[in-house]
Length: 186
Image (tube, rainbow, N blue to C red; front, side):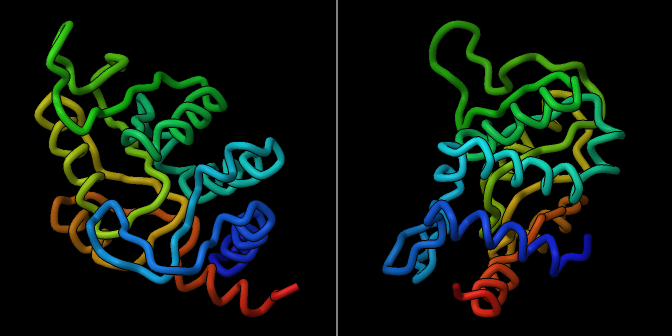
């Protein structure tokens, strides 16, 4: 599928689940936005998350095939990483935003085998959450060259990650989703 076709399919699923919200929102980056994409709404409907998962698999097929594990960014990326890992029969891990203060004090959970991993999140804005996860993973002995997201909001994530040697692969951009919704308003 072309990028436009991927965006069209994702836009339909997002619209069906009421996941494109208009208003005044504060994003996890701290930035304000008049549009919020709530990927968690897709998780409540099997047909919606199955379509989104298939789109993720298509967008990241080459990177996922070369990876030794799938790593989720807590919390938004974790369900998508878990579904990808299950579908691909690959080990799963996730990165906590901060080292836990009890037990083993781990920040990388699941202890997937060291090697090349793909980092998965739901939406990328500035890229700071993904970048933090990449740093933690690299400091723990993992190789990270790819991050995979459903939506890139186009607010700096791609550039930040590129400066770290990480390629951002997205199913769609926020701009392409909004254009798809405008093309198909019904």
